[in-house]
Length: 405
Ligand SMILES: Cc1cc2nc3c(=O)[nH]c(=O)nc-3n(C[C@H](O)[C@H](O)[C@H](O)COP(=O)(O)OP(=O)(O)OC[C@H]3O[C@@H](n4cnc5c(N)ncnc54)[C@H](O)[C@@H]3O)c2cc1C
Image (cartoon, rainbow, N blue to C red):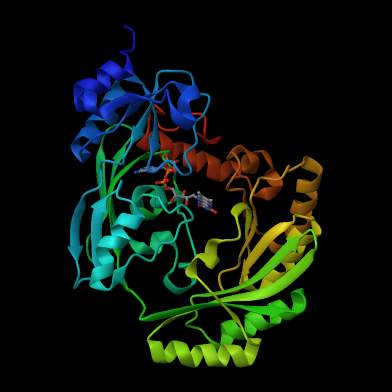
């Protein structure tokens, strides 16, 4: 029996208004059926039909970091943008439940009048809540509020075989047991579609000051940053910023302070004493170094060494080294040519630091191909494969994008 055409199959579930083709725009070369369910129930039906008929599915939130493989048809793009309902805003309980296709911007706009916010700051302003969870897309909120997975209290996911699983709950003090939300955070769309999630809320700070303090060299910048981090434990961000331009290299400390106005003013004064006078910046400065090309995660004490390794590699662009979280990002407007010899040299430089290295603007395969950058070892790959067999037994999600699948 032949596989039904995805367009016909999905039209029978969502109607013709929910089905189109990727014949225009950036995905035009793929000529895929694009299906946009209007409800979670429709989304579940699409996955069940795809499982039954063995149709590959690529999940798209806002599409800011979407990857497609060269997978042969039949395949379809499942878009979550119409799954954008707020399920519950429990203002007093500091929790927010919404469908996965709601954009972070829209959620923040709804919460702002209540003096509340989600502690998420992905690079893509358009990012959806589901996309942020799927990518574990961390941002500058990491130091003060924790990782993406720490913000998620509960989730609802449709697995590759059509089962719907719920994990966690809608309260801050949650039930005990396995926290599957953590497993799905950062899983991309490899095991299932996130339908909805519950997140914890924070208060919008009364005041925020972002500033840049110049330093004479790398050692001075790191000494100042570590001193600021120790003396201002509430600071939202303490980073060393190295701008490696053609006309020379500059070093500075980037600082963000937030909280009650009086406390921020006091902290600003003590930062100026410690780090010298500062240039005031807009919040956007926390992300304005460019597109991250290489992210190295090490122990906070090793951030200077990791920065030196990236500089020695002659990377150019901007390096931001967060001395509180140990995240060192090399950013540049365009992806450099990562030639194999230079990459091996960088891996050699970093090896003693036992880093986690990723190349966000590059295909996943770059990391997997290069064992020296911590490709998944055989035991972990086997575990991932067993999980994939349980969650997505026919491998309908993102085929060809995950080497362990
Ligand atoms: C300039 C720039 C820099 C960036 N730097 C980084 C970085 O350093 N680190 C980082 O992690 N990200 C980075 N990102 C990515 C981006 O911020 C996040 O990936 C974003 O949160 C994705 O949201 P989205 O809605 O656009 O998802 P999409 O781009 O549409 O999808 C991203 C991935 O998530 C999956 N997905 C989306 N929605 C769901 C869902 N409901 N259920 C299951 N899977 C889903 C997709 O299958 C895909 O694998 C960067 C983006 C930009 C534009």
